[in-house]
Each structure stands twice: as structure tokens, then as C-alpha cells.
Image 1 (cartoon, rainbow, N blue to C red):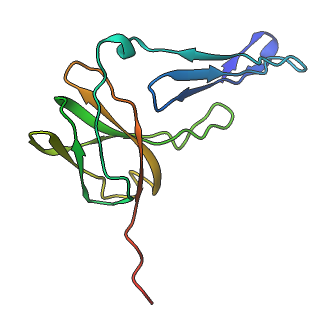
Image 2 (image 1 turned 180 degrees about the vertical axis):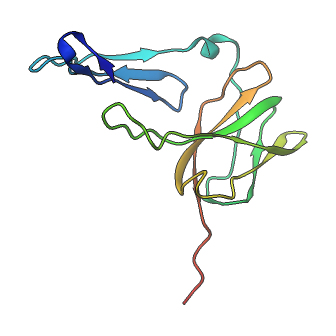
Length: 152
């Protein structure tokens, strides 16, 4: 939130899309004047070369599990991104969690999922890989959560 002339508050939102673009929208700087434009920004990292690709299983993943990704790219990092939920320009759910790479084999990379729900609350996350040249992949959705409850 930014202050505008006359003390009015500007509300704007920026959203990272699974494709890696950033959508910005907003504000309501003065009563009865609404900003209706939406802009899409293509960060320079999207033009640094071919984007890495990966495949993963589509089912939910439990805390502390190992996730194996199939890729031919040399990876620098693998991250989880929590989807945005903004209110009044504040996003208390915002998360970027770097996943430790535990092993690399030809064509596959294994990463350790968070084991602490306080670090990564249950829910949907985008998995994004970044190659050694700093180019990110498109994100893929993954559901993180505890295992099925024991029968009563």
C-alpha cells in the first residue's frame, strides 16, 4: 500500500503466474476514481534461453517425503511457491521454499519436501525448477499435506 496525494491510499496487487509472468493491477486512489488497468510484465529471465522442463507425479505429496522429478536440464534449484491470497496489499500466505536436492541421477533429481507444516502449511504449491543459467521453468501444481488419517 502506498500513500497518494491528499492522504488517499493506493492498493495494488502483483501476482506471479505459473508461466513466470507477473500481473499487476489496482488501485483506488480517490473516492469514485478507480484504476481498472491490468498489466502483465515479462521479467528478463524469461528471455535468457530455453526454459527447463520437468515431469513429476500428479498425486499429493506428504510432509518429509522425497519428490523425484524427471528432467534433462542441469538444475541449480527447486522451489515451492504458495499461491497468492491478497487483501489490502498484504499477503501473509506468501511463501517461497527452497527444496534441498538430495540426489541427481541421469534424467532425474530427488528433492526433500518440508517436514514442518509451520514452514509449509497444507495445500497447493507451484513447483518451479531453475537451471544453472538462472532460467526458471513454468510452474506445476502439487498438493502438499499430511498422510491419510489412521482409521478410528
